[in-house]
Amino acid sequence: MYKKSAIGSLRQMLASKNLQAIIIPTNDPHFGEYTQNYYKVREWLSGFNGSAGTLVVTMESAALWTDSRYFVQAQAQLEGSGIELMKMKMPGTPSIETWLESEFVSSRGGRVAIDQALFSYSEYTSLAENLAPRYEVVPVDDFFSEIWESREVLIFNQIEYLPVEYSGEESISKYRRLKALLERYAAGKFAYIVTACDEVAWLCNIRGTDIEYNPLVQSYAVATEDKVHLFVKREAVGAQVEEMLSSQNIVLHDYFDYVDFLSAIPADVLRICSPSKVTVRDYKALQVSGAKFISDPITGGALNRMKAVKNGVELDGFRHAFLQDGVAWCRLLKFIDDSLAAGKSLTEYEIGEKLISFRRDFDGYKGESFEPIVAFGANGALPHYSATQEKSSSVCAGNNFLLMDTGAQFLFGTTDTTRTIPLGPLDDDKKRFYTLVLKGMISLSMAKFPSGTRGASLDILARGPLFGEGVMYYHGTGHGIGHYLCVHEGPQSVRMEENPVPLEPGMVISNEPAIYFAGRYGIRTENVVTVKAWKEGEFGQFNEFETFTLVPIATSCVDPKLLTAAELEWLNNYNARVFEQISPLLNSEEEANWLSNVTATIG
Image 1 (tube, rainbow, N blue to C red):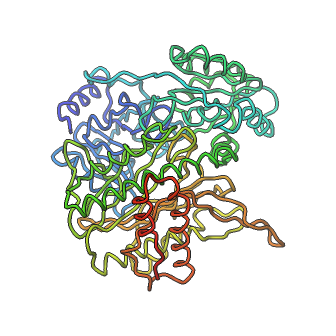
Image 2 (image 1 turned 60 degrees about the vertical axis):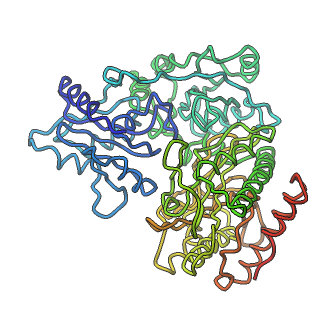
Image 3 (image 1 turned 180 degrees about the horizontal axis):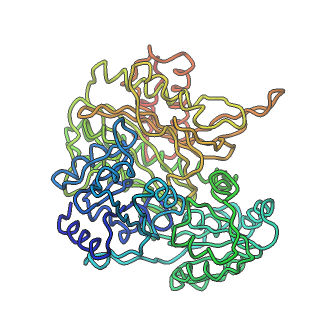
């Protein structure tokens, strides 16, 4: 909920420091998608709780920038706040810099504050350049605890070491591969700065519960020419974990000693870092006299690129995770069918909780990988809608779609699946758009492409059927997925915007075309795939996708006439594969019969 008094207190604080504006991002010093409550200043001030957005407050006005996933949600949550919604990438939406220029009346300019622990060095330099010469960007330390009386403290839970039977590679082996890569660019002493918690977790084979929905430890790492320095809360490391880390040539430091460690790195040690992943605070700490820097030499970051290509153990773990998750999904879908057939009403929240209860039956389940999205009818047109027990949980009844997008964290893999199912008879319009979304998902699933192909080159396969109707979705078609890590990870993607990272064998990525009609319904069908080698010949290596997801695709709302023979064959083969792999794991003949019916051949 919007806090008018908090905005007032913030303005008083700005005035006391001779500042005329402040820019407040969503992130923490690690630039992850999810942050601890301690860092949710933007949400506290604005009332908008989406996962992406930037709030700008001046002495007279305020505005919030967010992307298309949150336009409807932000409009509702900002109502009455006086905070203007800025729809990113929409025609007529000004940049933050342009808006600030228009808001400052004084020709003398102004001083714009940023928290130096929350802005990357590259963001800061770009902002400073674009606002110069009239406006000065002033890096400041966090002062929100002075006005946020109920601010939560940072959490540091116990750390676990991920055994090689799940990771597929010991930490010391990962370090040696990273070192060999860096030595191509850096001779002698170096310090490779790692700020992203998922990269630290992958490199050091550690997992934790410090960040909601993500098995992460609040941590930093610095890899040098002879070891890895790991910065965590020392009290969170048990004796057995400490012994394992030590055996992997990992030296422990306290989390809050990180900045001092950076400041103490000798000038003759080459700093290797990405200006987009190092905060202003940290970059300043690295800038001792005579120090030399090079940017992370690999697109997307050397360590991030290594992490994105899964090894055989990790890929088998994904297969196992999606098999277990497929059983839970089938039990949920049967539960929905049985409940509605018996005349029982179901709420969105109840359906989401039921799927979680089915997942808990499996060994290795560690929790959800993101907040469940269970959305009926018009709620399905909100890409990141989430129902709660207390409010905003619609009864799922009527002739419309139910969209369910949920994922799980298993010890051996991370899942993310979306299914849209019909509740009651649907009109031809709904069936047509359901089929077109499915057609795009199938087209991308069947793609064959040469080595070196980027995701942007394949994106049209998913969007093409919708473009033919003059409609589109604004989010990406595919995001990378971590191995018992973040459900959204880079550097690979499938989206309209250019991304120079090619899709390599071993990368895991989502395939999720969609369509949203505000106030009416939304449709999204999502499978998770991995890139694998297909064939090699005189024109080089070609790749294809292997689908991990094992959840029936609803066919009662498919218009077979809109699918090609190859697409129809793919759909029937997919559902047959779901039955073949899932049915032996079901609890009863009744469940198997239900699955047989919903995966029956059509066309």
